[in-house]
Image (cartoon, rainbow, N blue to C red; front, side, top):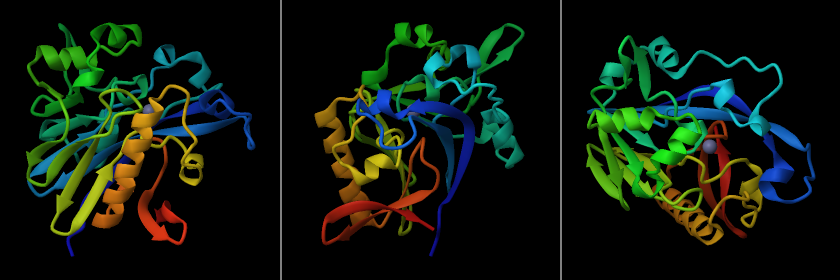
Length: 258
Ligand SMILES: [Zn+2]
C-alpha cells in the first residue's frame, strides 16, 4: 500500500497559558510549551507545504514567549536539510492567518522581499484576508506573495487535483482551512488549529477563548467523521504526531497513532 510521506518541521516553541487560553482554572500546570509545526507532504505530482511559520521574538506576542528561548533553524533551512528545495514546492496551503502560521513566505533580497516559494500557488481562506492585521502582527509575507500574483483566496472546499484538496474548517478564524492529501487508499489531513492541545481531545466542550464556538464544534465533528470514514492520518499544527479517529462505545474520539 502506498503511504504518503508527511514531514513535520518544528519551527518554534511557544508558551501557552492554559487558563488564559481556555478561560478555566487549569487542572494542570498553568502554562505549557506548545510546538509550532509546518508540514511538507509529498504527492506523486505535487510538493506541498502546509503553513510557513517563522519565529521572530520581536513579533511574538509577549504572553507566548518562553524566557531565554532560542529557536531551531528556520523553515527554509529545515526544508533544505531534508533535500526539499523551495523552488520545487508546488502548493503552499496556509491553514489560517495567525502570526504563528506565517512569516516564512518571503525571503529578503537586496531590493526588498520576494516570495520564498516562487513556483508555488499559495492558498488562504478568503475570510482571513486582512492586510491591516498582517501588518499589525509583523507578517507582511502574504502581501509579498499577493503582489507577485501567487496568492489565491479560497471560499469553501476546493479540489486542487492530483489528490490534493482544501477543506473549509472555520472556527479558529473565519477562513481556517485544512489540507487533505490522498494517494491510492492513504489519506492524510493537515488540520491546523482545529485542536490546539491534546486536552481538547478529551473534552469536546473545551474551546480556546478566541474561536467561534459553534463553527469550531461543527468543524471538529466533521473532521472526526471524515477521518474515521477514510481511516486517515491527521496532523495538527501544535500537537506532535499522527492521530486517527476511533469509534467505540462512547462515540468518536482521537487516538495517537504509532
Ligand atoms: Zn496556531
